[in-house]
Image 1 (cartoon, rainbow, N blue to C red):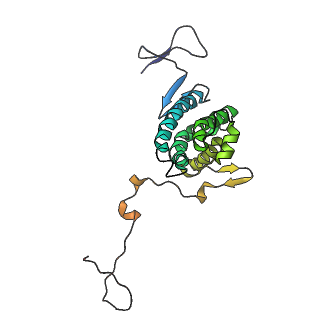
Image 2: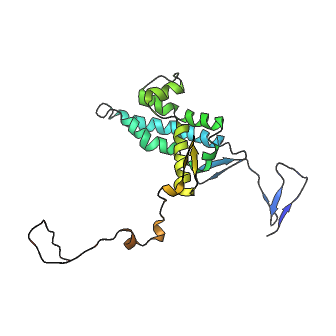
Image 3: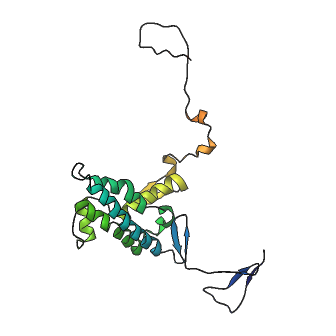
Length: 206
């Protein structure tokens, strides 16, 4: 498969063709639900998630309001069970960029509308006040924890938080169910003997 670079040289976007078909150069690409940009800032990814989160929050809060009088704190449970995991989707891809202030600001801004629904506050309240009053961990800190768990249990990397080092060997690794026979996962032992009449005994037709 011949690959050629033709035309006038462009150091940023050189023209590339494969089998005489020109490959279009783009600044963003979506792969497995994560939008990658050329500078790995994931700005477009978080922008898309922000718009979807606002719509999702509105729909879920509409349903939750019907039951809020009977079940207090229902939307808080919805946030922890549905919205927060949704916002942290793909953390394995962008987690190593959490040191960038632009990333942390983007993450925390995603919490704005859901936290407003939790404490029923005005939109003008600051993000920091929302997080404190709602008692919810800032999303960038939560993301660091989830990313650290991802490195330990999936990538098998040691991680360091502050002065403490966590070794991946000290934690259970994720098992591949396709590599283990079901009989090797759960083993049920059996035996047969005469009734003693002294303890509680269970009889089966086996």
